[in-house]
Image (cartoon, rainbow, N blue to C red; front, side):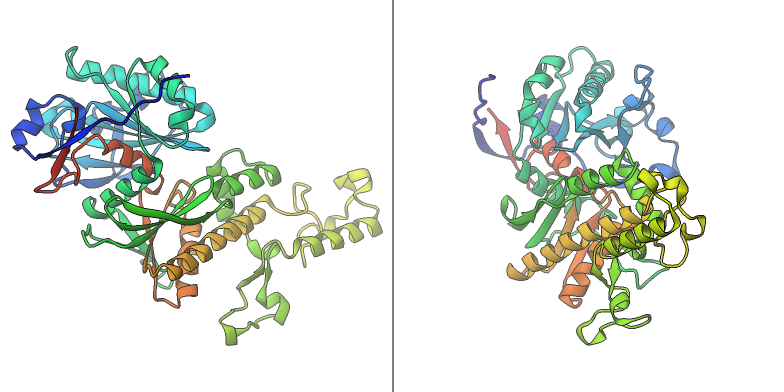
Length: 456
């Protein structure tokens, strides 16, 4: 077993001049990233391969089969010219997220950008190979005398795969606390990156998304981090936080159940199916109980409110079985004998086109709503208990998916009667990775009068 690393001793030092930071100090832990003028690049509006000068390994011929997903929004840092000699990885139970810096067009004077990519954790060897290619690119770009590229790692995989990463890459791996990285990453996005944080309001169909300006008055707040499971963290100030709750019903739950109930192979496939689904064929609504067009408005329940997730399944299953028995169908499980006129009409008691009793799309949407509503309600209750008005949702579960964002936002608005607000991020899945990345820099990154902590 590898010997446990002791935390580096740190001493307080007042920031030196920009010249000292940019050029005189070679260690990556003391380089101050210049975030002045930072902005988000949408890859749909540009040819990423041309603008980044092929600096991403995605253009490397060694990668014959792409096993990762490149997040569509890099962060451009037009004024950072110094060498960045580290990458960061947040390795969770389902996904491994990587953040790294590259020079723009290969020239230091052009600044650079932060890239965001993810791998399924079960393909961790592909992730490590990607880091090796980054390592080679770092040497090619900065010369043989460049500081060795180091790896900042957080999440459970930082411990599980620690020896493997060190042996494969031959570099130092610095492990960082997961919760600290989440908070540091979120604080960075809120305070430094414009157009990163947004709110969602479906009552404004023409413009449901409202982007927030970068702000400094951010505490206290609640972070709801939705990965394989869910953690809820009260943040009172820089490095002042407490995990106050959570739930095991998170992204891993949705992924696991839908892999059993549908033919989806990836989380993105599941979200795509949910987009096409109709949960009303699976969920029991208030209107189904009170009658068509009726709700229970006295207690705030409309006819479209879900009374029971998957509440129609048993009834529809029994109806389909009775119809099949009456018509001689489903003999020995053979769907081909079912009556064709009960396939999808009326109450939907028969089979859908591919022989299933319920459409995978409908199941996907129902389960997505069930888990999202559950998370939203628990988040509200925690925010109420701890008197927190701002609720930030992060984690790879969200994926910028409109239905997920709508459901979480609606839950907070509904239960709080409009007194609390749900906030989302365009890089919601990379909070931990960004937090690990900026651990290799002075405290209060990019702000004047900052205090540096230099490892000795």
